[in-house]
Length: 337
Image (cartoon, rainbow, N blue to C red; front, side):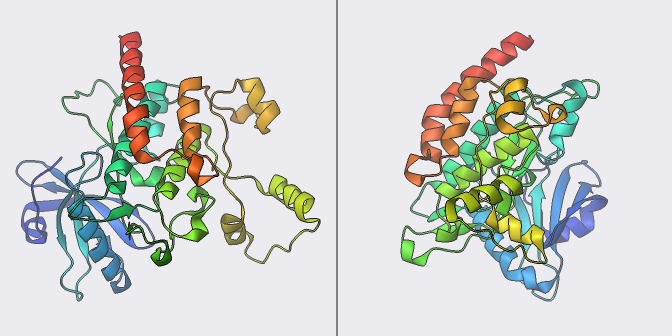
């Protein structure tokens, strides 16, 4: 991967397009390789001029965050000329996102190893702590869209690939700051949350504050482990709504969009045996997930407290959880060895 600054001029003269990596609502991402030294970069381009201001904001934030090793690095950009597509040049992460990487792991494991989940938890906690810490140069930043798609997986230093395996302990990096906003501490001037509803904290309608990122981290862990969004399913939610209010409600013509913003988040334990998953959570027998330790479950649960004052902070995760994670990762490596 390249860590040196790369200009758009460099990109045109010295790099060749290798393949498209993905496309979202605002931008496309492609892989480019240097002609002579073989270094790789990811190039994000706006799909139209309406995204120009969003790209400028993202570049501003990424430049402020270059000191954090768990946030994807910006190498260059072109955001000054609105007549051409806005472009951001980023370091390339070899194993894609947490949508792609688990599929690679499943080839050598039937589940995601616990030490991998600890590493993911610790790395993204470090990224959020960096965002949520005010400095003399910047205000607190709230990411607003923490989810598997926005966590990239990089090859660890010194890793040599053997056969078709992927590293169990890669480096995880938080990416895509399109929805990120500054938090100045004034609750009267909060920015709206514009992320992905399935990962929204219960209080998302109150505006963007640091605790919403912590809930989203917990929801992300749950989704990766269970294969299910961290929300109620529609039928139980309707039953509970009727029980509490004594009446139902009409579902509009676009039920998917309606439910996405209506259904609240839900904590699901990740330390249950298969039988408990079926009996307590209503999980179909063929959809049960690997059981993880009580320790990992307890720390993950601290992220998904409905009451904000009960929810753990990013700083507490780094100070208290990360040392536990490091011990668990070391123990897992010893057992593998």
